[in-house]
Length: 598
Ligand code: GTP
Ligand code: SPV
Ligand code: MN
Image (cartoon, rainbow, N blue to C red; front, side, top):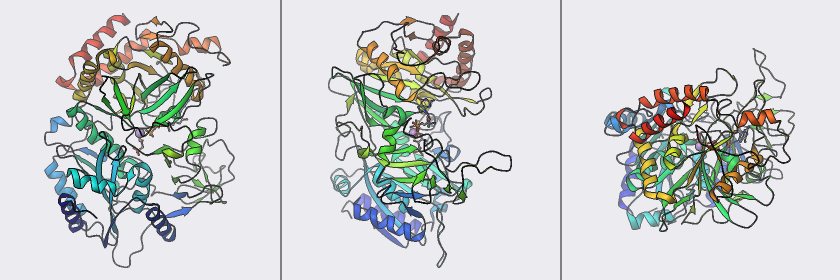
């Protein structure tokens, strides 16, 4: 409990509105975690995994309708519509509060209301934010234990500062007396709301129990609310991994990379370098908070304490360090549970005879649907929740409240065509253009028809204000940092041949590309100038030991001016929606690129 009047008043107000059966103040202790998990195992919501194979780990299956973030039910409810901009859904805050208050009325009936004090960032660090999530989901409480720092110390800090970010969450499924609960309570799509009242730093989430919809410290606080604060206060909240790359002489480079969801942040953050003597250590895999430090450089911290990582594709060959991170103390959501009570997912790199699939049905790998398509055992967005501290390559400085100085920004997305393996920006402003026009394919399943989505800085679903102002903020940060601004690069690991094979081996081999970037920063290698940016000269990016045919390498390094002209035209169309908020410098960059493309 707390003595803070503001917090007590808010909790009392929510209790009155949601009418839970009881209120529990969380302390973040192991005893609390164990107790909630034991209750969920007893109710059938959780499966305790094999203690020998997967110590202290649990599996959950969600409702089949509640499997990912719901962008079309996510709102930026700013007072002025203009402040939400073209990339966000907007509802007037007064109207949205009215709608949601009706939904919240009595919504926790039959349930326990948990009050979770948590910190994003190391507790007490000047860059950290204190917050409270109120939720009626014990699954959310346990995930928050791993993903954030839950502690009564946060209550003491709130008592001192009288400041916290209130985050209200309900699964939106009240229980009538005697009514038996389902395994994964949630509300139907049309009743789900993920709302951000950005003028008062308030988060209200209703109806979903999954991921970023429910773990409110993550996308809602650390990106949508924090991006607003960052803009006002002169810092940055970005959808970026943070890693340290150390060369054989011990020199450290810090890299922050923005790729859209499920485009390889977790993989790159934990990369096993194939360049002799160079090693990667992980600082964060999803979110970076960055502030200029006393020396004028940009310092980054990871506000999270765990990884909420995509399970499918996580294998010994692709990401052994992520596998190791979830070898114990982990929560798995929507994966296959095998008969010996371990977990499995597609492309895990191990054989599976079958088990119970994410929909709770008996499943074998040869099962097909009515159209003859293989039935997947794990949902494509199934996830593991793992403690960052359990990752064998976590950087010893990952919790340093001062952060790490960023040398390099990397932007990218999934593009099976057009975009080369790597190119460097001519300068920071050109880098902002690159990040602002980053694009990704919705799916790689259909090579020719894959829909392309522009995704500025991989932040489209997470910018908490007008996207035009957001781009301007990037330029402003560049002005502030001057010649100490990070160098900017654009990568694409996802080029394919016409018959659908990867052109680049990816994963650990991406270290070769990172090394080229570090060599550029150190001035050890030159570059060749192309219309779109600076690219590796023959031999500077070492391919030794890789079996890449010369024709494939040429394709990976090709700049097809005609294709780029058409991408540029699409970018112009996309950016037109930013209206008069499109920064002048973006227009200048567009014009300059047009000229270079001829
Ligand atoms: P969020 O947690 O959703 O923000 O995503 P993320 O960016 O952390 O995604 P993650 O690292 O889990 O991306 C997983 C997908 O990217 C899987 O399909 C991987 O197989 C694929 N992937 C990652 N790196 C590479 C690579 O170098 N080459 C290829 N071909 N695929 C890659
Ligand atoms: C993403 O979708 O970018 C994620 C997962 O990192 S979630 O936390 O659900 O947003
Ligand atoms: Mn993410």
